[in-house]
Length: 237
View 1: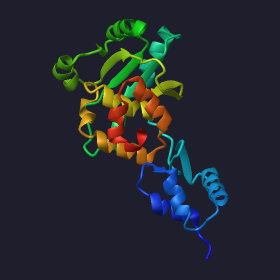
View 2: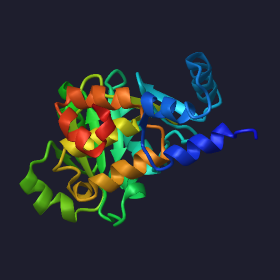
View 3: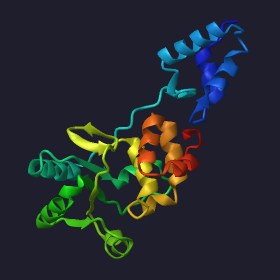
View 4: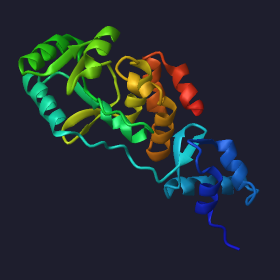
């Protein structure tokens, strides 16, 4: 009987965010006793997109989508305004509502996080205030509690960490999913509403979208949060 290895691998590892090469080889060893044949079969599974190679010795099921959130018109306008004023300054915009996709309990009070190079934060802050926006520069916990948590359309300005994993969509710089997940763990004041559902967010993100483990951990280490990320993604370290 001909074996459908697509179904075999899908059934074996369904629901697991990742699996080791030893687990994969162990599954295939039930059908092949030749290591060269097993190596060829793994290569074939990767080529056909049935599995993705996350890092050395670690795989995940293929067929997941690339994360591409919908960017609101207001976010585009604010980003373009900053870019026009400071064309050579790196800027990244995050809408906290993007996390709702992975949360059981939806958050209705959301806001915009604008990250720019440290030297430009005050300029951007003053410019947004002048434009009539409810902007807050590196707000502390008390400011969040007293003002931001009850505000509509609040904008938080903070420094952009160098070498942050960002990408461009519709000519707008946004965080990669890997950056969003790490920032959620690091910036607990900004993402306090998501903190209680961090496990659901990690689980939903990893199951639905491609998450680059190397990129995730590189940024986590840059922010000194590698151990914390390992709590939510045990295969990470």
